[in-house]
Image 1 (cartoon, rainbow, N blue to C red):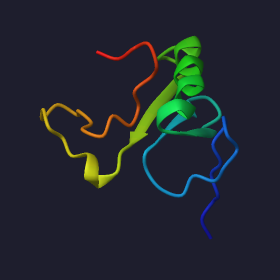
Image 2 (image 1 turned 135 degrees about the vertical axis):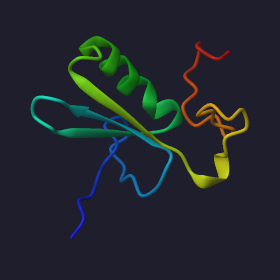
Image 3 (image 1 turned 90 degrees about the vertical axis):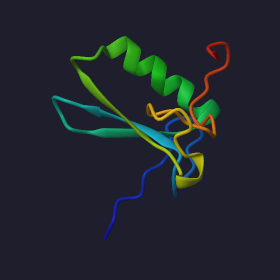
Length: 85
């Protein structure tokens, strides 16, 4: 039986990518957020905790591809308002 993951922002079930997750290194507990607008609080939380405390994971759908060949997302799954290039 697999665990049901819910988005920490909208509280809806995460069924497929895109999503991001933060894993606490000390407790190994995982928190997930949908990509897009729901991901912003997760990114802020990860920045507050710092790289030594958490592991960030990003899952993209296959349709996004890798246009630049450097872990780039063609579908812009994790674009945060105000931080676009």
